[in-house]
Image (cartoon, rainbow, N blue to C red; front, side, top):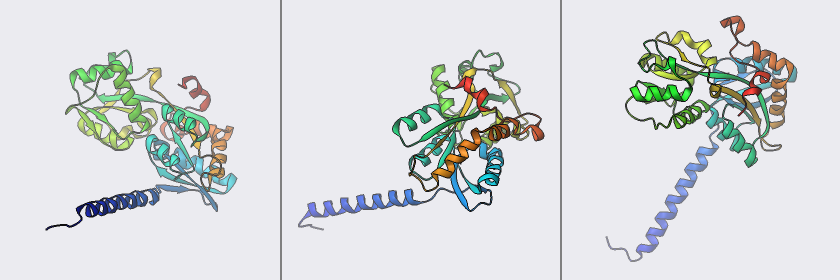
Length: 293
């Protein structure tokens, strides 16, 4: 086919493609995040993004206690720390609870997050098969444990999802001077509990947070704690809220952060899990403060 004005066709095609991409981007951004659960019966509500505290039930207990005081429902959006930060940045949630110090520092510096409040902590355990092929029980640090795993090319599960856990994992590989790759390095792109199940199925090493291990270790009978105790593996949680006026229910979310930091909220955190698991799943903010990076 002969075209009299090929440059006009090219220009029109390019414009059409760009408009199409713009529409797709706009549509993606306008799609609201999936609601995992809602806690409370109040007329008011606010959206909170987090991962494990929701999976393990702590968020429900905090949300229902807050609702009794303020008449406000907590709407939980299930997301790892990286995704939670992005949801706050794009104003899709009113607040977040995350364990990602570098991401938190960046959010505060750039001004799209405020009200940083330390709320508690847990720690990371490196679990693995009882045979311990990599001999990490004798490791001197988390990085040393990772070095031993890489040298033996024993199966290792990574969440690979830019969550706080994944970011910490990558920091440890960096400390170890290792770029993890190969068939032994298995990426799930999934949350903590699902990844722990996969580690059990593959009899692989995995870095789980202590809260998930206490609550969910029954799903991983092939695994045990093989390394713990490195101060670098302590996991501090921060709550952040959108700036004033940035989201519709920001002020209610700010009140929730105040509640979590109060004596009542901290008591819930430091005792959560004791009745069911005989040990608490989280430490409070006073304990966590000594490990802030």
